Image (tube, rainbow over all chains, first blue to last red; front, side, top):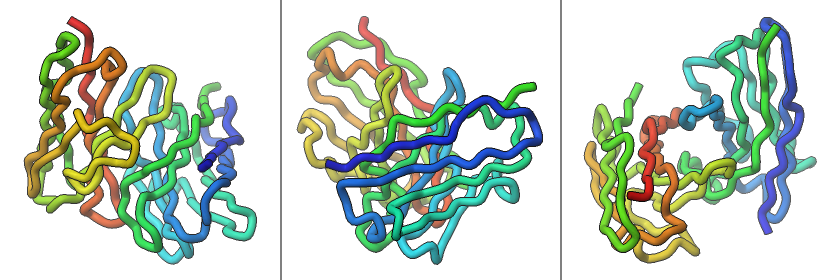
Length: 122
Length: 108
């Protein structure tokens, strides 16, 4: 059974940093691209970032480019999101999601975690 | 950046109704489109990928069609568990991904 478990969320002041983690199990982690998607309270889905299976390619939404960094550790079956210079508008539930494509980036996610909440407030 | 526009933003329907949700891309995306269902307090669930391919385990009353800029999600006969919010998503502009704003499907 595929499982994605996010952690690392919490309350943080504007301008500070936070690192999210996603622990994956139930599939061969290093065969799939991974994504972070967020959802502000009462709002729609926003893709944040994605990374290819071998970390060779990464992508970011314009809203986080230059502030957030995605990475993965295939030996630990883990995905990360380093979030710097946080703003109030980054407040959201952050989901980790597995890409559908085997050894390719399809950009479509077939499994999602339950999310970790990040609140940016003074 | 490619923008995705869904219509309607909300729709009311009854059990047994046929419902269609549309999604328009600001530029051609071939068939790089997915549809997701999200229920309150839950993570999104993939329904359709590559515009018209049904994800494993998804009931056959869900179908997707379209290519280029115009796409549709059709639910042929609404069931009580289908009342949720639906999102389209484009994945044509590697490595960027964009979601539509969502369509809330409510019980009439």
